[in-house]
Image 1: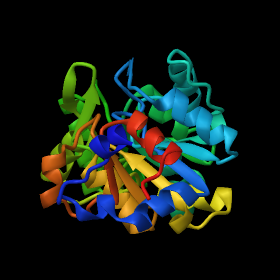
Image 2: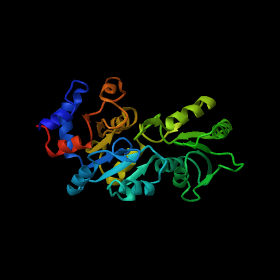
Image 3: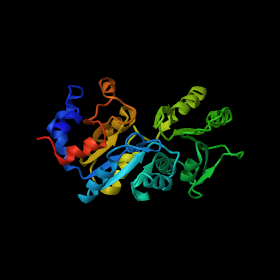
Length: 291
C-alpha cells in the first residue's frame, strides 16, 4: 500500500487523483484505451508495466485497444513492433490516426476523391487500401484534400505542393497535432511541427482527426459496445490524450513516462482524473485499490 500511495498523485495538484470515485471507476471499468508512444514504449525501448497490465486485463476478460496519433506505421507494423517487446496484440486492436483519417475522408468526401499526402509510406498504405480514395501525389490531379501526417523526409517541395493544392481549393486535414514525439533519445519534432508550416504558408487551419479530437475513442467505444464513462483511457500527453479523454467522457489517466510532467498539470486545458508514474503503478492501483 505504501508503494501505491507514493505512485498515485496524492499531492494537491490535481486533487481529482485521490478522490475515491475515480478509483472506483478505475476498478469497475469495462474497457481500456492505451496510447502507445510514451506509454508502452519510447521509440524502440519498452516502458515498464505493459506486459503485466495487459495480462491482468485479459485474465479479467476486460477488453482493451491501442490508439495512437502516430501514422508512421500501419497496424500490421505495430503488431510486429510490439511483438519484439513481448506484447502480443491482434492487429484489430490497434487504431492509428492514419486508419481514423481514412474513415474521416470516406465520410466527408465522394468516393474516388484525389488526396495529396504529406507523410511516410505507412500513411499512404493506410489511406489507399482500395480505390475508394485516389492518390494525387505525382499526378496533375487537383486534390480534394491535403492530408498531412508525420513525415521525417519533409521537404520544401512537399510544403510547396501542399500549399498549392490548398490554395486551389483542397481541404486541409491533419492526422494529429502532436508537436513533439517521445523517443529513446528524448523529444523530437512531431506531426504538429509540420502542420504549423503548412498552416503558416496557407493561412488555413486544418481539420484534426487524431487526439485531442474524439473520433478514435468514439469508434472504439462503439465497436466494444461500451459507454465512454465505463472506459479508462491512458496517455502521456495532457494536450492530446487527456483532452481527448475528458472530451469523450472516459476516465483519463496520465502516466509520467512520456511528454507531460506533473508540473504541467496546473496549466493544462483538461486535468487528468488520475496520475501515475508508470503502468506498474496503474497495475498496483487495480490490484490494491485505495479504500
